[in-house]
Each structure stands twice: as C-alpha cells, then as structure tokens.
Length: 265
Image (cartoon, rainbow, N blue to C red; front, side, top):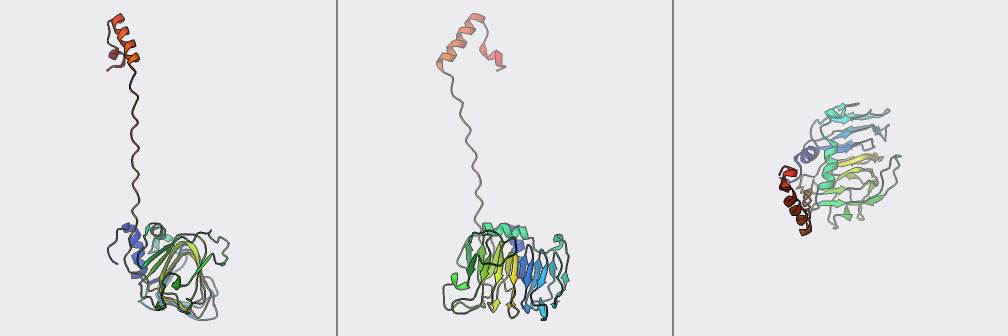
C-alpha cells in the first residue's frame, strides 16, 4: 500500500486484509451462504452455513490462506476450507487485530476513493437483520459506468453502529467497494457478488448464489491527526495591595526583624 500518516499499528492490520486476501473479518458471528468465498475469513464468534445442503468453498483463490474462527463452525455445514481452518481459536493467533481496525475507522479521512459515513443507529444485539440504512455502490460512485468489479479501487468506512444493508445499484450492478464497518452489523442481500472485503461487527449473508471476492482496497489512506491538548495557562497570583505592604513595614519597625525571615525567604 502507499505510504500513510496513519498509525503504523492500524496500517499493519489493514494491509493484512489485502495481502492475505481476507473476504470477511468480524468481531462476532458470521453467517455465510455464498457458494464461493475467494479469500479466507476471520470470524471472532461462530460461523454458520446458511445453505448447509449446498457445497461451498472458502479460500478458493489467491493461494491457500487459512481461516480463523473464534467459535465453532456450526453443524450442519458443507463448507470446504481450501486453505485450512483454525476453529475455536484464541484471539491471540488471529492475524488481524480487530481493535486496530476499529481505531482506524474513527481516524481515517475521506478522499477521492475513501468515503466516510456515520450512519448512526444502535447495534443489533438481538441478531435481527432489519436495515438501519441501505446502500448500493451508486450512493457513493455516482456514475452509470461504475462496475461491480472494483479491483480494490474504493473503500467505504461506516462509523456508526446501525445495521447496514448492501444492495444492487439502480442499474442492477453488483457491489464493488470494500467495506470497513467495525461497529455495525452488515447484511448482504442478493447483489450477485461483493468484490471487496467486508469488515463488520457481525455479518449476515443468506444467498447461496452470491460470491464474496475479497479483492480489497489497496489505495492510499490518510488519517486526521489527533489534536494535542494545549496546556492550561498558569494562573497569575494577585499582587499584594499597597496597604498590605504598609502593615509589614510597621511590624518591621516595631520588632526590628525582616518579615521575610518568617517564611525562610
């Protein structure tokens, strides 16, 4: 990836999304029906097969990249992990540190190919799949020529927690850009395929005819510097009044001592 002013720890986690070709990364559970997932997956919770009577492949392309599941691969399922899988795996062996992606999403700045949205809303703790906000890629790429095959050109960052639903464009094209939505549930409807990666707190994709490509964003990222708090000014002590000095001068004349000796000055 191009040089970036973002925190190196954030960029290390983000660059692994592309270099290891992860299609899906979640903090919690993921439910996948896609018959072909080109890259591997890193799922913090359990992985559910939404079409358990149909064969499907994870890590079908890009090389034999391993998948990591923090919980179990729920049975029944017909998933073949071509790159292997570590199920019931401790977070310590996960390649991507999820907290770094959370932090990156809050500091990354918008640019020509990076779109930053705060969709608002609350996280769906009950696992429901109602859409808080729905988007086709034409919401961001305002062109009839935008293609589902995005080739890692664009990234959409969602900072809110409300459920995001991905849809086809008004021209019925697939969803091309990568998604970084670490605080939200992402629901993928019948879009044909998602060309980029998806990072989400949880993920739900029931359609068995869909593909998850994981051809992730590899363009430039710029972060907004965290402002350094300015130190508060030191308050100035009020100057003694002339009347106060007159009192001490009178005391010195009467005692023959200097008033500073009272304070070890």
